[in-house]
Length: 156
Picture 1 (cartoon, rainbow, N blue to C red):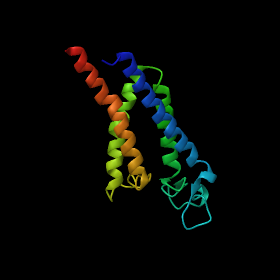
Picture 2: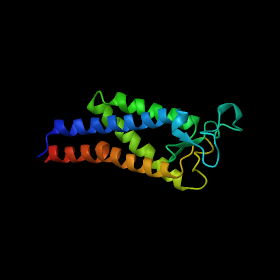
Picture 3: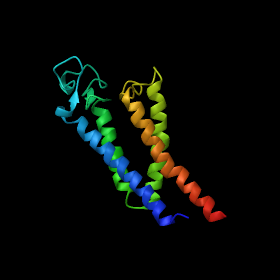
């Protein structure tokens, strides 16, 4: 039988890893050398020439993940929340659960034509769907499935 303390550490590490990953992606989105805009010599659409909020800072992080200024801010905020939730098992569990639900919804939204830009605010399409879905699955496993498995073991 697994040690309960080991399970809570795994939940905390999941929140920490997701936090670090999203903070790195958010900061990378603000780094022009890591962002590209296909078909142009620009790395992203500069804030002062963007026609709307969605286009502000639009580009592809590492050429893979579409992003814009708002999306970078959201990724940084989520990353910082994940890192901060590492401090206790209960906060990590809460973060993992909320993250799993929110990012599963975002992954589904990225597949739908009318919501793939989060109603004109952030790009959710392309490789973002896979990133959101896989990280939601990991967070769901460590935030929902693993604690419920622990509860069943304690009850019996």
